Amino acid sequence: MRKDNTKPSPDPQSLAERIRHEMDSFTPSEKRAAHLLLSHYPFAGLDTVAEFASRAGISAPSVLRFVTRLGFSGFPEFQKHLREELEAQLLSPLAKASPADKSPGAPALAAFAEAVIGNLNATVENIAPAEFDAVVALLADPRRPLHFTGGRFTGALARYAESHFRIVRSHVDYIEGQPALWRDRMIEIGRKDVIVAFDIRRYQEDVIALSETAAKQGATVVLLTDAWLSPIARVARHVLPAHIAAPSNWDSSAGLLLLTEAMVAAVTKHLWETAKPRMEAIERLRNARA
Amino acid sequence: MRKDNTKPSPDPQSLAERIRHEMDSFTPSEKRAAHLLLSHYPFAGLDTVAEFASRAGISAPSVLRFVTRLGFSGFPEFQKHLREELEAQLLSPLAKASPADKSPGAPALAAFAEAVIGNLNATVENIAPAEFDAVVALLADPRRPLHFTGGRFTGALARYAESHFRIVRSHVDYIEGQPALWRDRMIEIGRKDVIVAFDIRRYQEDVIALSETAAKQGATVVLLTDAWLSPIARVARHVLPAHIAAPSNWDSSAGLLLLTEAMVAAVTKHLWETAKPRMEAIERLRNARA
DNA sequence: CCAAAGCTGTATCAGAAATTTCAGAATAAG
DNA sequence: CTTATTCTGAAATTTCTGATACAGCTTTGG
Image (cartoon, rainbow over all chains, first blue to last red; front, top):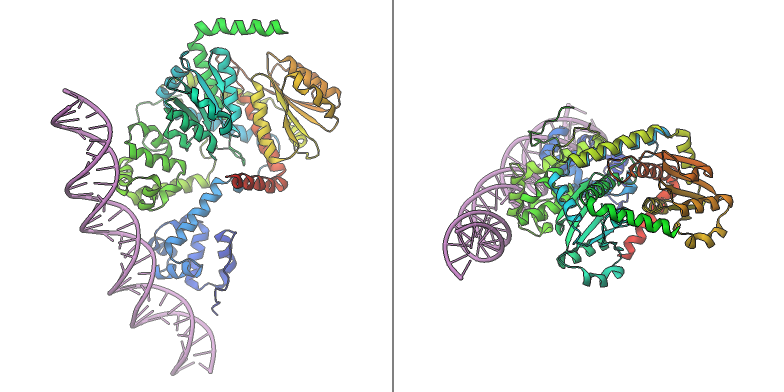
């Protein structure tokens, strides 16, 4: 009772679902292949044909017939599909759905905190001390103007950094990510300037463009990013990666904030001789205004 | 608390982290390979050598040299490692709750992180679960417009919150702290509106004024503040205090960020039915632009 | 500015992997 | 019980991938 594979099947759904759906129409050995694949989906399919066949307890040709039956032209194409499906699911925040699981309220907060703390530990452990020190020394050099920038979400962190550094030293500003807003300012950027860019995954084109342009002008680029590294890393002189995984559809920026605050603290200490009178003066100005 | 800094850490960590550590010692083409791999980790490594080389803009032999340099006997072994790592990571998303044993060389950063982590724990312990839940329910009510605001430094956090909530639901905005900028908008604020104010010590006059005015108009005020409580607490319906002490001249906002992110996560989950299509639509718009 | 060392790509090869062939085994029908 | 049909796996075949040798190029050090 072989069915002709009339279904062109535009196939927005997962391959796994389709296999489950068509399970009835499979031959015995095809079923063994299907069960193996579904039981370790999709990793079982990423091995070689021989390995897959052996683990399923069938022969290689049966595996080939199986993937052909699913509509693929060959095993490599089948594997490619699995990889792409996996990548899409892993990268898209939408796919991290995780519907109904956790109990509400405080446990959620506590679980979230636990994950964030894990991130902070991992972040600290993976920062090269020399790299951190070098960045601090760079940011503490009063002759080098500092420019902070960031993306959709990380822009807020860049602002946070800027608002602190602004108190401690001079020549500090924030650059909006949109190219129209910074294009003409680039003429001012040169060897002595330092760009501090915040960029995490879903890396943002305009921030990348800004950093690359600045680097081309000779500026020193410092990058705060996630553990997978923004493309900006290619042009960055210093890279500080943070762990950002969280039990949520969103990533956590706590690691980036930690690094930012630690930098602020270290630079403040470093520049204390000049920072102290400066901070006092700012204080006086604020009070005078009120 | 035993620390063992003698070992260069055989291989408990992710390959990605090791690559990042050794990045400096790579040759130019090895760096291109490394960057490609890290930017699409680990999927870029699951293709064939030729594909990988082409995407990295280098030759196949360079890729081979790269994986050899990482300590693998060949490309297949390298791929096998990636698959196993991926599978392990996918099966236990939060398996990385590693206990803290601090890195040897960065005492400043490590000490800072320790203090921040202490703050986070203290923050979580001192939040009344019911209060957190109530805030989440409030922020997840689509009929209630949300307005975020904050002070000199906390303004960045308010922006961070706003940029996330804006994705998840509608009627979300950010209000600048300066009275001149919000005075006339207050006419619009009424019983149904929710003000989420960020304010920590050196409590800022204009944020206080804004919150009091809004409260007088009948708006519901949610306050994120430090453990000593901003004066806004007097008019706030809900107060979420965070610990902010840090070994620095500055306070740490990590606790506030934690609360913010936890709120975003909880509200996203709460509104998932409507948030999902909304996020997908936003995604489409963003892609369309490019 | 020159020489040595190191890096990188082209061309090539060996080997492994996927695929096809075909004969035998299992199954179902008559 | 026989026969037709389908299914399956061993072995042969083909394709393609990963690996290597070598020569040109770039960078580094004197």
